[in-house]
Amino acid sequence: GNSVTQMEGPVTLSEEAFLTINCTYTATGYPSLFWYVQYPGEGLQLLLKATKADDKGSNKGFEATYRKETTSFHLEKGSVQVSDSAVYFCALVAQGGSEKLVFGKGTKLTVNP
Amino acid sequence: DTEVTQTPKHLVMGMTNKKSLKCEQHMGHRAMYWYKQKAKKPPELMFVYSYEKLSINESVPSRFSPECPNSSLLNLHLHALQPEDSALYLCASSRGDRLTDTQYFGPGTRLTVL
Image (tube, rainbow over all chains, first blue to last red; front, top):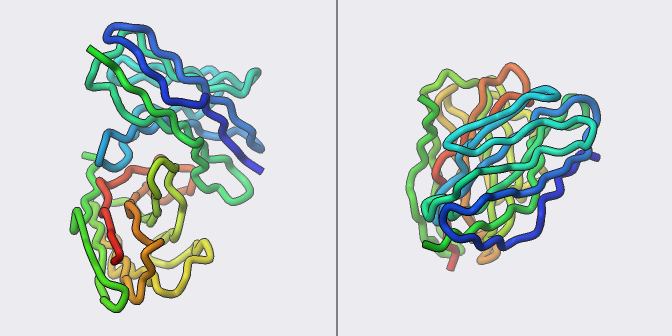
């Protein structure tokens, strides 16, 4: 079945450090890929998405590239801020099968000043 | 505008109470979803409504009863809940052409069952 694997957290960084959160997937067909962010005590916000191979999603300084050859969608940011502290979920929807949004387990990021 | 609103923000109820959660969107989306999220876990799908018809029920206990009165509104009626039902309940919506469309989430209702 379809699945998403994210790097285990928590991740703790200092302000202005470089961030990478790894995400790999298993899916039939050509899934759409998403990163959602959940700030403490809040719901999920769509951070970025990509719908086909080699697409790059970007938003608020975050980027992720859809790599079909490595089945990956790693999240990166060049310089994190304290306000980026949150839980990040990688997710996919695959055509065919159940077509449900499948989430990774989430990665908690803490950025210290 | 990609806003999904949910009320109430917090809800505390006893096991014999009946309460309802409300979700609203005005983006013209035709698919709406209920998710349950326990602490430190990803959201789990409960129900999907597509064009105001229930299309997916993920074997949710009958003490949870969804309702879609119109294309903008989604309710979740709660009755005789258990303490283990305490969680964050998230509503989401998508355009509705395909389930592969982007889902936009509301802020959630934090439910505590005593």
